[in-house]
Image (cartoon, helix red, strand yellow):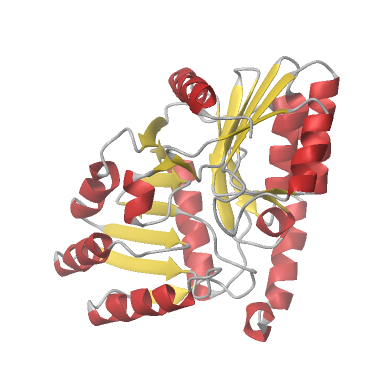
Length: 331
C-alpha cells in the first residue's frame, strides 16, 4: 500500500493548483454547466459493438483507462490497433477489490500482446476511472471492459467529441501515465479527487422538483444528507441500487434506513445488474460517470464523470430510469 502514496507530494501540489480552478458547490450549481452535443449509449439494450467497433476502427490512438479488463476481445483489438500503427496504451488498476488474480492475468496478456500497460497512478487509492480515447473522440463510461458490463449490466456511456474535453481527458491520461500533476479546467468534466464532491453535490443540491439517481454503492454521509435535504424540501428523490446480496459492494442497511426515513424512495434493481452511476436533477442537468457515492470514490480515487444538459441525453436517461424503476423492487 505504501506505493500508492509514493507520489504524495506531487498529488498534494496537484490538488492545491486545482483548488484555485474548482468551483464551490454553490458556484457550480448557479452556472449549471452541462455538455451539449454528446451522445448516450445504454447497456445491455444496445450492442456491445458500440465500443468494440470503435476500438477496431482506431487509426491514430486508443488510450484506455479502466478498473477491470477481462474481455479478451478488447485486448486483441488493442493489439490489432497497435499493429496498424495506432498508439495503444492502457492504464489499468493493478489491485481491484477482490480481483487481483484477474488483474495480474490482464497485465500479462497485454504485455504478451505488445500493448504498453501501466498500473494506475499510485497517488490514488484506486484507478476506478473508465474511459477511452479513440482518435479524436472520447468515451466517458460507467462500464468496465468485461463481458458482463457489455451484456448483462445496466451501464451508460457518453460519446464526447468536443475538442477541449477530449484534450483534457488525453491530458489526464498522459499525466497519470507519467505520474505528473494534472489540473482540470473543463466545467463539464468531473474528476476525482479534484472536483467531484463539489460538482456532484451541486447537482443534488440543485434539485427542486425531481432527483433520479443510479448508484452501485451509497456510503457517504455528505451525499446521503444532501439527498435527504432534497426530499425534505419537496423534491421527489428516487434512488436505484443493487440488492443487498448483489455482491461485496452492497450498500449498508443503515444508509438505506437513513435515506428511507428521510423521504428518499429506494428500489433495488436485479435485472439488468445495477452497476451504473448517474443522476438527473429537475430534468435539466445530469451526471454520468464512474463515481460511486462513497468517500473513497469522491476523495481518494482517480475517477471521471461528466455533467450533461443535452436534451436528447436527458430524455433517454429519464426514459431508461422509468423503465428500471418500474421493474425494480422496494425490498
